Length: 628
View 1 (spheres, one colour):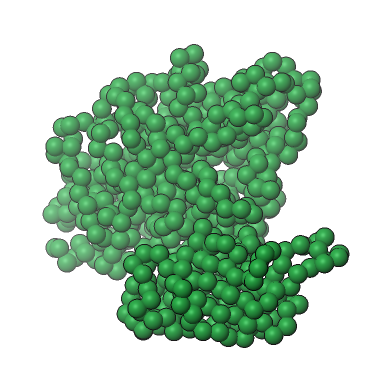
View 2: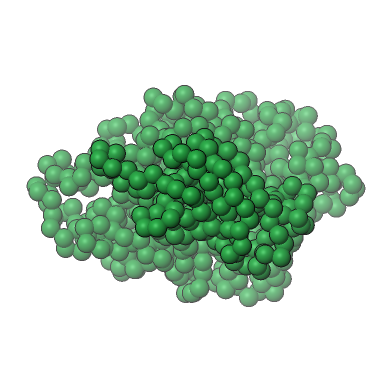
């Protein structure tokens, strides 16, 4: 029996007659599997199929009847036969919990408390009184797209840390945009003295002998350029450098390597100093450029590498701001698996709506509505693949697109037509996220009822954008021309509307569903704009949680480990966060203490990475003020 169970598919087969099946145009006698497609229920009695993940696809501690979820709606004697056949796998154990995760970008603890006291957030207030709440500490990332290196609370980076339980440096989503592969480089030059530049490398591990490899070129107007490379104060050698990109390589003596910090210095023989019209266009003295650097060991394996943009914090004196061709973050950029992918492989159903950097959509055990679904105009949407998983779900969701008249009414109720906008671009960005939140809300109302258990997550962005634009008005800044006093209440109203959206969705789930609400950061008014602060909100309500408790010390890194524990799964040791044991009742922890595992999960299989830049996303980010 054990060997047979090890051959079960990594993802369980969804239940039979569901609204999701109806949306996808199937008949009531078929069900969907993310790998096998649509199959008749009667054909599923033969379940000894090879897992598409091999041995990694086996689910340990299955509590839902082997490969099948508890509470299956399949007709006839099939569930009974399955229970008998897989009785040793745990059929009849506790049903899968339904966990609903509300991701409210930019929701601030201080403002939530104010609006609760005023009775404007009844849904959130009820959840907090019946559950656990407290501040949620965010995490900073490096802005790659700015001329100078800056750290900040970057929404895609923070939400990806929520989903993976690891830091941005490990999951790879560092900014709103990332350099296209192979496009990063950085110029070297000096306004005073000879052109040289230094960078810091970390520990060099592996089997010696080591070699330092790099890609360089000389400036087009520098003749007979020569480069000397120095490692920890010792010259590795000199070499001529041409005007086109070329590979360089020097032996790296093991005796020169230090335990942690290793300095590499590039010394060019000469540089070009612009004058006249050229100086007006670009006054930088330029010697040459570095595109990449790597250390390889004796088996030619890369043991350390540096990308001038991704690792710009390692660049020291002598380097100008790195450059690259940037594209918006996509699902192919993830270096760590999201919680919904890992839970799906363990047999839990998932439904994800609108999370950052989930386009192109990929196979999950359930459905995934990618981040592009709420970004692209209706006319463009049909031109792009990968908007949803399953792929055919996208066409079925198009009738839910909010009409312009509905979105215009929401906007005008907040910002009257006669009110002059300080920045039309910002107002258009605000309108676009109102449209997105309304669309995601409608999608969730259709798809959430299809789930009987597992993880459902939805992302709302309007609070963040409204806070950036209108928190200063709430704090007493002068109103734009023609604007009534009601405009000062825009932020409060957006919070209230989001609270109503949550209320509508909570009516669709059972009373014993687990509800989580969190934000990636908060905002406060600073001058004419709302600015990020480190603490967001955390709320948890459910049968296993303490009631009316207040906690401190929670981090965005702790959400994914907590979800693993909530589903009674072992927590991967690779995660940087810890389960929030302080939110659980003592009785639950006594019977279900956290467990850890060295197991790792594969990255999602992204079949068609996107190419090019999403212009609508860039316009929105520029309107909000995130991009120059």
